Structure formats: C-alpha cells, structure tokens
Image (cartoon, rainbow over all chains, first blue to last red):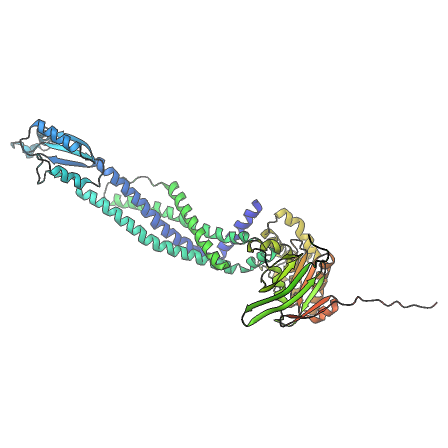
Length: 289
Length: 240
C-alpha cells in the first residue's frame, strides 16, 4: 500500500515539476482568487461581528418634553421597554445630567440655568431595526417629535453598506478569479496528460487500472489548489498586518481581532484542494472522452 | 467450462468498420490454439494490427466476436479491460520506452503501475531482463541502446505480468535484419515457455526463416492460413 502511495505521489510530483510554469500559474491564480474570496469572507464576518456588537455600544437617547412628572417618565420608560428590539431603558434625570455637565465643563455652564430635559437611555437588541424603534418612540406623547430621539444612524448604515460592498466584491472578483484558476488547473492537467502520454500508454499496455492512471493527475490538481490555499492564507495574514500598520501610521486606534491563521490555513487549503480535484477530474473526463 | 475442442483464441465473423469508407476487417474467422506461434502478415492496412488491437481491446468489433478461452473479449466492460490486459503482453512497434529512466526503471515503472511492490520488482525484474538477454544493460538509458536492445526491453516490459499471450506489433519494423532475427529468437524462447505468441509483421524474410504458422491478410480479409510442414531430417544410410 505504501509502495503504491509513494508511486502515485512520485508520479504527481514528476508531473508538477515537468509543467513548472503552468503549475506556477495555476497555483498563483488559485492563491489570488482564494485570497480574494477567503479574505473578503473573513472581512465580511468580521464586519458582521462588529455590527452585532454595535447595539451593545449603541445608545439611543430619548429626550422628553419639559416639565414631565416622574410618574409619566416611568410610564413612558415602561412603554419603550415593551417594544420589541429594546434591551434596556434607563432614566437620566435632568438634574444629574446637568450636574455632570457642570463638572465636565464648569466654564461653559456657569451662571446658566439647567436647559436639559429629562432623558431615557435606550439600548437595542438588534441594530437592524433601529429606525423603526426610533419612529415608535417618536410617536409617544411625552417625547419631543423633533430631535426627541438621537442615535448613531450613520454607524449602522456604514456597517450595512460595508457588508454589502464586501459581499459583492467577493462574489464578483472571487468568481472571476476562481473561474480563471479553474481553467488554469484544467489546462495544466490536460498539458500534464499530454506530456505524460508515454507513461499513460505504458500503464494502459500493462493493464494498470483507470484509477491508477488517473490518480496522479488528480493529485496534481489537488496539490495545485491546496498550495493556492496555503499561499492565500498567508496573503490574508500579510494583508491584515499591513492594515494594522497603516492604521497605526495614520494614528487611528483600532483593535483588529487576532488572525485565525490555523483555521484560515485549513479552510482555504481544503477549499483549494477540493476545487483542484474537481477541475482535474473535469480535465481527465475530457481527456478520456 | 471450456471444452478441449474450444480454441484458445477465436475470431468469429469479425468485421471492424472505422467509418463509412474504412473497413479494417471483413468477415474474419481465425482460431489460434494455446501455445501457438502465429505470424499475421500482409501489407500496411491489411488489418494485422487491428486484430492485435481487438485482442487487447484497444479496438472493438463492429460485428462478430473475439473470444479468449470461449469468453468474449468484445463484451468485457470498460472498467474491467485492464484486468484482461494483464493476461496479455503487448509489444508496440515504437518500443514506448521512457527516455529518462534506465532499463531497470522502465521495467520497474510498468510493474509499479500494476501494483507490484519494490520487493517484487527486485525479485522479478532481473529474471525478465535475463530472459530477453538484456540484464547486462540494466543501468543503461534507452538512448544508449541499439534498436534491438530497445525492443528487448519493450518485450521484457510486456512480460512483467507473466502473460500467457504475447502480442507483438511489427517488432522488427525498426530493426536491422541481424537484430530482427535476435528478436524473433527471444519471442520463440517465450513461446517455448508456454506463451501463445502472435506477431503482426511484414518482414517476410524473418517470417520465412522462423517456419511458424502464417496468416496472410489483404484488405481486411484472411486470404491464406499456412502451417509449415515439419522439417524432416534425412538420414543417410551408409553401407558398411
């Protein structure tokens, strides 16, 4: 068994060496396509993850009309709490808010009577429905309809648009490059079959099984895709490091999560290997047709 | 079960049509016994190679049937053809040697392709190379060998499965006459060990010298099938 595996691997390696340039082209194109698909998928999940953490950081401020009573505030808070997608509601009394302002900005607040209304701090469960929650709150009687609700609408839009952009970029460029890589692997295998027609003929003459004849070519395609995956995972690592350095250089403080190297290496290698196998099988099907 | 009257190899009303204009074989009937040495002779395009291809299932009949020990070769499923080929030794005209491998590796490569282990190769390859008389050149590369020697390697490779049938397509086609005789002697030696040998050739001087059964073909038909008379050595009686 080991002898047979050694023979098949040896044959595949011979073919890889013999078609050096074609192999290199197939590996690099696979790598770039997997880099784009893998890298953009990685970025997509990261942005999505970030989007999911936004509601936790994200507070909606609800400013009440002037002169409302404590009981009315409690009822309004209760009404908001009952809305779907609302996690918590906290009352911020106007006196406490003003005292804080006075502490933080004594020069600006000196001699001014407290202009702040009572407010409610609302945290959401899901970011996606923030607009409808805001509309519902604006409809409440004690809430100022103009400027009564304030929240970071732009962040939410940015996250959504980023996700969409990443998704489309990934689909568009990833598909184009994946198709290119597939064609290159396909051609590499066909050329390999052509350059090894002597060996194939000998195998046929002496009665080697079809599996034995085809296996080296399939291994070759798989290795090309697999190496493409390995290179792609290192390219993504390099891209993430480059991004961190860039953010540092422009003084943007952002904490990017650690790159899951092993996971990406495994996932992209497997995906590349499987894709290479599919392409080489298709090439051999054509060859033996 | 095979009857003792069943020929070892039999072609029954075989017709092979490649396309509307090319009919490679027409109504060919041929029977070959186990252990025979048969020459298929005729001009180029007579159908000799097609018969070998039918036997190795590189080609298939259009009508009729090709039988080996009573079993149809034509109906062997595609995924079982390789098992059938292991019962045959096939010697192609162009030797089909791997130029970057030496003789030992050429034979070893073929053995590994059919699943032999390195140990099996070490045990069997010297014996095969010895049988065809090329063991002393085992480390040489094909381009360092004469045509006759290359053909011996091709024959050695055909013997790796110890096949009961050896098919040789123009084995002397690329050789000088002196090498042709050597190759035929190798084939005869294999035949004497029990293998059925079928040789397609148009090398008539060699055929005549070998004194074996000769099936002559022309335009896809068998036009004669001659088994040579045994040579009777005359004994001189000397009166005392």
